[in-house]
Image (cartoon, helix red, strand yellow):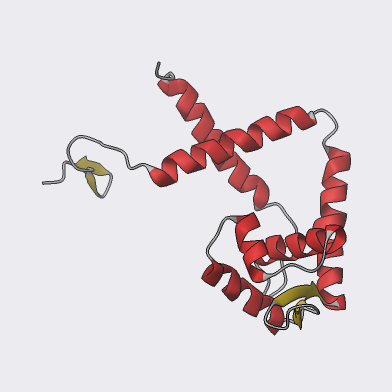
Length: 166
């Protein structure tokens, strides 16, 4: 069973609106990216529930490659938001820990802002939020793993007229 095209249009329009929502978040200081914030948040979460995480722990949580996380870690080290520490039991293992500066960044951009937003969203249930997040995750997986099989080639534009591409 195929979904109606209008439903797909609605879903894609909603995704565009979701992107616009993220653009309304407080501006980040120079040298800090949304990816950096995710790493800070995961380090903070893991520090609260267990011992400071390894780079591989963060890569697994974010479902990205270790080189990608290594780059983000270097960026966070460069702005003194995190530090690397040697594991007490196994000196070969390096763990990540928030610095006081990293804790301030986390408190402002994650705890404070997300807390404020939670107070504003009083008419959306947690179930609806989880359903929306799951739907977006499924759509992303489908779109990133599969390529469309469209017939012909994409039309090229010339000024305001659409020209068939040869």
